[in-house]
Length: 200
Image 1 (cartoon, rainbow, N blue to C red):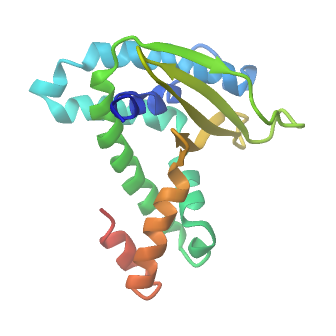
Image 2: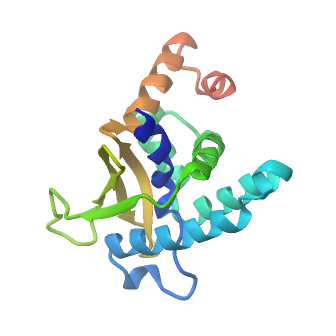
């Protein structure tokens, strides 16, 4: 479990793209690999602020996430069919909540990365259409254990690869958050506004 905690930070490894490279020119796998290199160098640069100016540190992490993760799409995936009655404002609000949740959790976890080996794996189900959603797989190898990460990526309307879901050690994030969302919907009699007010 220590390895799982320590390497949960790699989920964030696909959040950036080099500014001089068009996403449309990259495959999902290339976008992920480029993002890892840039993200880790960015974190190394701002890491001292975690102790002295935490807001500045998390702002840098959030800015990186915003360049690659489509949080509104993440919100739609998490809400699933229960979100059919959600207004655009509620979807945008939930996207902001998820952005803050993931930024805080993984931003703190990024501090523990110590250069462990990252191995990209071929897709277990290659898409028949290269422009459809695809999973980017990675294995993180520690001294005595390893586990796999999967990033579900899609091409948006601007032909940019974006992240909309991920699995960490077999745990599907959207499914996990959907369970929480469903429970809150039941508790608050399907009032999405109250669900968002009480999201923790």
